[in-house]
Length: 149
Image (cartoon, rainbow, N blue to C red; front, side):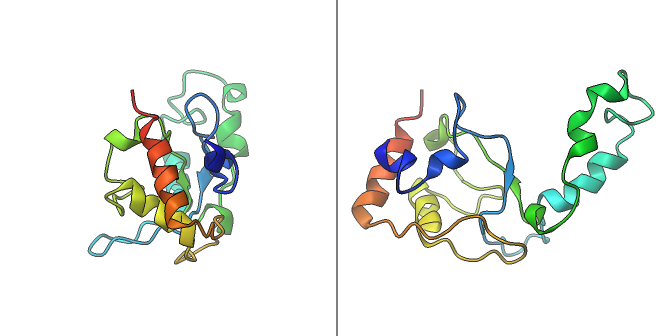
């Protein structure tokens, strides 16, 4: 827990009872060979806006006042390029593979990624190298495994 809220700074995005801020972040996750490019939130915004069943669409069942999130969301820019929603860490040890397209098969690979914090292929990664020692990485993985039921 000390690493989680301290040096590793996981709590910045993984907080609250579900251990997620429900926000979108670019964390420099690499693309998957053989899959089409996935630019994250930036490509999804147009789909959400065009959906006739969204809260501003012609088939909505409420008025515009119920649609603050859609009206005021960030719709473009580098901050949402390659940004993906922060997942809950509850039960994470039981849900491999990890990241939005299964880039990592173990929690150790995930922690190693954050420890090195490579630059994003597009946009700007919000993650900075943690430079965790092997012992710190193992301790953080052990903590993550305790978050299962």
